[in-house]
Image 1 (tube, rainbow, N blue to C red):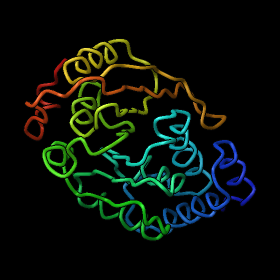
Image 2 (image 1 turned 90 degrees about the horizontal axis):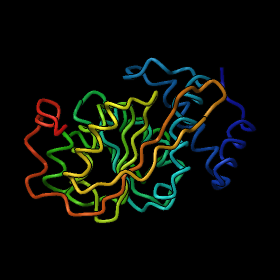
Image 3 (image 1 turned 180 degrees about the vertical axis):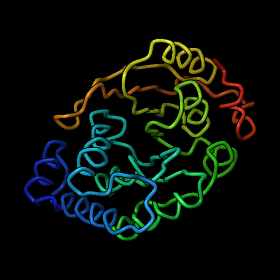
Image 4 (image 1 turned 30 degrees about the horizontal axis):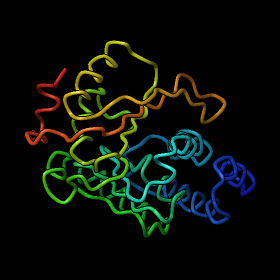
Length: 235
């Protein structure tokens, strides 16, 4: 089942995107539907419109993303939200940071098939990337359903430039997870700005964006060795 141009146009207008955005979203949906080896069970264009396109676009409610020059999407998986943000923000550069080589290859194919020249897939762990080319390189770092907040904050902080923002897509709120995230954030030079409830599509329930800003330098001992953030979380 295909998605009509009118539906894509309405979604683009919701976020005041350019007139070429619907075409880029359509190309991305077609590429996903045609991908023979997707690391996602959501391929049907009508379902992918909600769960991948609309859900990813909800991040544009955060001004830091909407005006970002460079975005790093950690644990990108099949490429969401990064691919969609690249389609929505053609003037921004988006790096899909994914350690799984199969997933990274799929994300790269999707970017090429959709004509997203401002997007690249990087087959590397976030900790390794942050110790090299990615160190303090991003205005915004994003993550969608990858790990607990305390772990994600440790991945994100070394990648962010001073004043940058980290946005995590999450479902139901969890006070224990949020407290651990706050403790880790303070250690890492991050500060929680807001937790915003979003409704990217009518059937969406309990969707929240956790928004942190980088208000202080991240200590030089970060990033730690790959795997340590999960094995021994800061909180």
